Length: 455
Image (cartoon, rainbow, N blue to C red; front, side, top):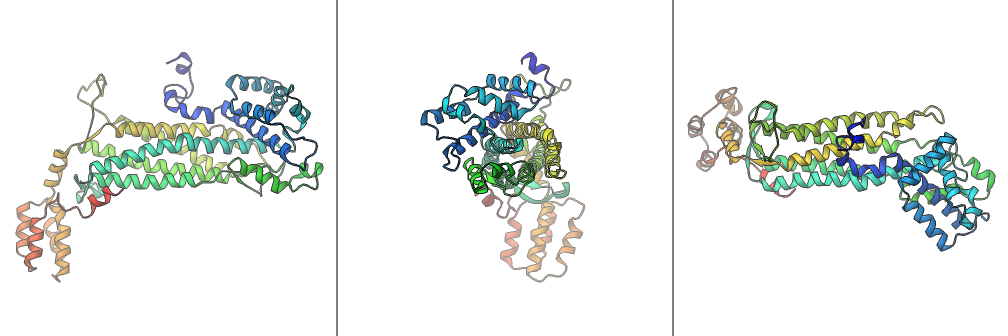
């Protein structure tokens, strides 16, 4: 670990920097500047490609290639140059415009159109489009792949343990048996649905001037259909065009994405707590790693720390994500600046989300089912067969079946012999009696194995 990591204020940039590397390109200050450069360049290219803006001559193929090379290959050193200009201008977006004019001063056809960098734009046209691109790219490159790896691991566990009987514990008490794989399938299905909701959010952007009315655009070119022009521009970036805004894009789509991510994190918190409990019960063992220490004083311990770390990180992420989704859609009148510092922390929320996903995945990789412990729990819980017995009794019209089994089983354990004695005395068809007598807690599984195998 470097000295800078040791001195980092946030653990995302210190202790956990290697685990959040996938987000740096997107959510860092460099990432924001890089996307601003991209938007400004694409806007100038769109103006040059239009026959409605005669003052911007069409660019040659070589010029377009050079513009693209700057956009695609923008470096951290170049971002530092932009920051140097910002130190003078005290305006971050204006610094991008000035840097671009300087960078292309020797490219004749770009230099001739230099004043069309940032043409008719308010800073928020550039910023909101950049933020949408940051979220779009980070979701595609880092967040969804991390979720996919966790979903795949839960599905793998579901298939691996599809037929491993397990005692359920509704309200923490013994309940109808399931299989270990079916419980993993439940989680995989929930996460798959949550993942789909994250992926389905269409990131929107606006490009309509200082208060959303194309005032500046029309003052210069009153005959251009700027709404259609700008819609095509935003859609060319892979974003959804928002036609009705104030100075800022209202961040409703962002809020949808943050809420969807928080809901996925909540599913994962639930999963981590359940697996923590299964480890505590002995249903899962954790693979040992040479050299690891579980406790500073108790040498025997193998703690489920990965699931605890994951739960903590998902909690931090959700606190931020939910604040974002509640705060960002609110802006006084046509614009206030309270969204600015909040938006600069998007990477922190997604950093803790990705960190939680990686910790969860690490923990899942250590799990081994303890079939002996699982079987012992089931064999000590014959009372769970009160459910099928009273259900068969109902079928055959025996009075008060629930109450009879309640008196036999509620609040107390029951042996195999006692339950079989009760079944033997029932006035039911012999085939049903034989089926009930052949049943055990480990065989009373319904469709659990089938459901687990098809996830």
